[in-house]
Image (cartoon, rainbow, N blue to C red; front, top):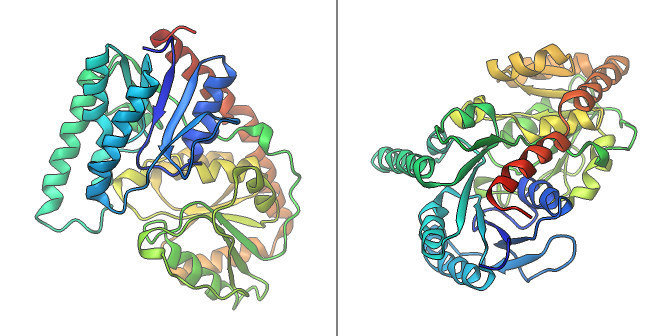
Length: 364
């Protein structure tokens, strides 16, 4: 082992993943831990976050074979005392490496793994039950054999019986959101990955329908196009795609919004989620328009910081038009959201909990 080094490892997430690169690793570095991130990237980096680059695989099979070989070799070079993994498919590799090298190993559960299987459109009726069984087996293995579990939501934490399970939610760093809202009339903003399960087509159709009520309505998208969304072309007047925006620039993008959008397909791993985007909208002082999931309504409805819209373009457009026509109400909802974040939803508290959890496994 190399002292008390910690390695955060992912072969799936992109280099600047919000939870890993912008929250957890910086939080541990600020707390004085020796942390290196091994993740898909073009080259090693050594500035704010020490980073070891792993190659991006051309497909799932290569990711499960070639990239994992590269990950194993990186671990052999880095020799961490604690390995903190972020991908379910790394559970067997991480356990084997940690066991062989007498290191400790933690699994960071970003999502409900079994529920996530239901969102995989490429799984046919034969493969889906097999994938579900494999997901259950991985979850059970991690629960029994990992030295700890980090869960992104309460519902995910409830899936694990590991006595060393900690809740670290995807709240924003509130200090990053110090720009006062300056909403452009009619501007809707969505920040995050673009895909059909994240309702890309619904947002575009909603904006087009909304223009019949609010001619100035337009949609600004900030994020990567994934899977079935790749190659989508947008009308620059109605929908503008900024691409992947650096985290430092997100607050300024959000400050220009009259409303922030967050719609997801009603799949098990989404309906009980705590979406990062929703917290970011509130931190920026922007009212949200969200899918009307019971868990979201129960959790965020009492904050009175946004509206929940039906999964019907015409009905959603009519309701959203009423909100956009009332800038004072938009400002009031945004102000309530920002106040709620200041009181309850700042990542500072999550960082403290992650630090305490990590210190139990690897003293500084």
